[in-house]
Amino acid sequence: MPTDEQIKEIEDIITKAREVKDPASKEARDLYTKAIKLADEYFKIERPKEEIGEPEYDPVRNPPDGKNSGETSPTEKDGEGKAKTTLGPGAFVSDGKPSARWLAAVKVHEYAHAGVGVELRDPTDAEIKQMKEMGLKDDDIKKIKIPQFKTNDVNEEEVIAYDAMLKKAKDLGLSDSEIEWIKNQKKSFYNKMSDEKKKKYKAQEPWLGVRFSQPDFKAVVGPFIVPKGTPVFFDKDQSWNLPRCMRVDELANLRFEGDYQKLFSLNPGFSVEVAALQTLLFGPHGTSPVASTPNRLLLGSPVFLADGSLTRLPGEIETPCPGGTVLVRHAYSECESDGLWHVVEDDYVSCPPQGGVTKYRVFDMATTRACKDGAAPRPVDVAYKDLHGDSTCQSPKYIGDIIISECVDGLWENATYPLYECLDGTRRVSLPAKDRRRSDIPCSSAPSPGKVEP
Image (cartoon, rainbow, N blue to C red; front, side):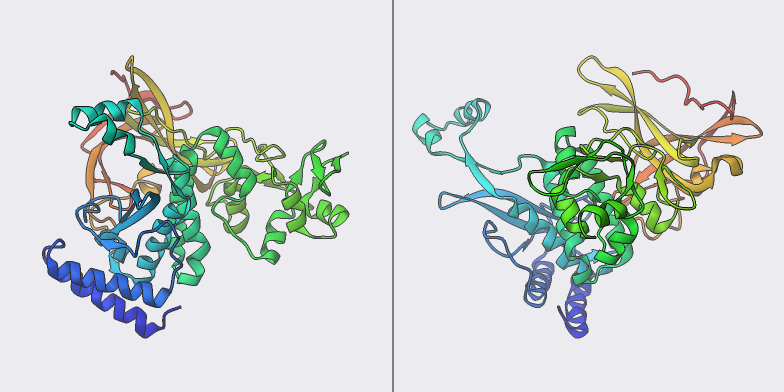
């Protein structure tokens, strides 16, 4: 790993590059390219065979005000499937400051895209038609192969790429906030995958985005309960249906000589919802339906299942229909089955092709306040921070309004705020509210955003 002097050398170059007014100028390009080369030299990150060369600085493909700090695209070279990576100004900064470590992390992320493999396929009928419209001849079209990543699934690629960052995070010296951001990004793309792929990934990596040393792993996972009747393999050919509920640590000691790695390698279908583990590690701030007794930890919902399946839980979100139009965003506090107040957001979306309106739960964040301990927390205080004076929100972009229901004197009051998205994908509201309307719905009932029309 680089020395402190080498880190400073890279970050000094990035600072100079950021001082150049035009990020696309030759001066800026030369400085950013130098920073990339030094990061390559000092961090010595292995480049996959699919990658044509080291990343190139390209602020056009990755503009400063865009969401992508880097982009890896499949390409063809000498009859083989290859990949090419470009980086924009966002790859060189973290939390608004020059960061050599973050530059290395972005490089790891982009290389992971290439690492999934690139294949060459024949053009589809639609692509052939388009080529003919462009004037290409049949003989020329027959020679063309289209490069694509082997996963052919952008969400799966992103899960793999963010996971690669997590594996290298400690070696690169990333901060806790950076690691947490990566985990959230990984989980957001995981949530967008098909149910079939989710199940596969739960089997491969039961604790999505969370990693422990072996002692910590035993302490965290040990108290979980394996349901009665769960088939457990204790060698490749023999399984045993549990005659009773059994703690993980009890099962490991009884049948696997305390070897947790053996237990889970032979039973890859076991899965534990990450929110439950975060609660164990960090307390109820993170989200899980957990209740404890003096001698064991019980899960209030079936988040630990032998087949990798998962029922809807507090904190779980939904992916809106592709190509839909958001008509109304509605946020409020809700008491959920884990006994905690959650700040949630329901988006009302007009879905093609008929344009019918469907409600999606797109945000769900548990608070530390128990339902029994008092009134609902204000979403603006907890989840929707004020944009003004917040230096952590870079390049805020107005994305519409959001209606936030607040409990006032026993009745729901709907406040409308302008909603902004920051460069890192987080959101802020602009205070004060631009409109307030008091409803006649008591706080003991679910609030309503009012009439929603397509």
